[in-house]
Length: 261
Image (cartoon, rainbow, N blue to C red; front, side, top):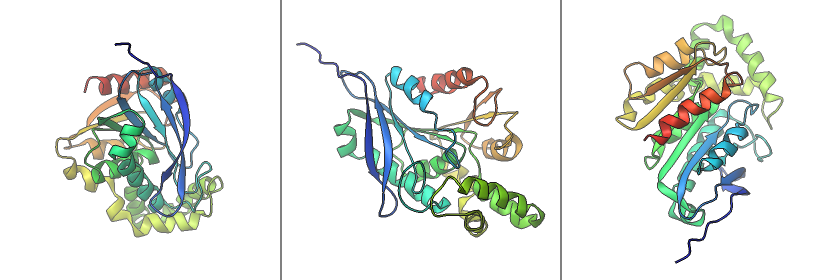
């Protein structure tokens, strides 16, 4: 019997958010003759580095790749809030593990992974805990927003600087501002702190990628505390926060880890 191979393609999808709005996402599908693994990419704050070049490379390695958004980012409707980011990441993962989605897109239901960068690593880890059907989590310099909320309460002299960072990012987002976002971090610091999730990981498959030179998700604060006494494996690369330098080395390192699982 002749094997029919579907061509590689790129699709625009509307996926459910954690609210009433839909999210605009891109699905890169490989040339395939049967179901293939899916990687869900979650981007950082405010959406500067979308890692679409990695999506194309992963497609060429025979992965489906879903490039996501959150409410109020890169064209998706709604108001940007950090709580919406968490809700949307979980809603996306609940949708993509459903039989309706995996069957419609020829996805191997037992080979669905999260790859989240910076804020995407923060949201992705929460979603990984919330949706137990996900096979693997890869956090690429995940930014622990809950811990930062706690630190600004403990050291209020740094609040103005953080508010400035959030305000600059909010210019590229919808219906938000730095004061709203800062207030969220202070109010939800305890439940959003990634350190509170370590015990829930158990023996699940999880990897942290970081760099000694990361100027945003500082390794000693955002990586070392999370990796210590946890189930996380780790890879340390020589790069910047957005992985512009030595980008191919970073990509090769975490994809090699994933393909060996």
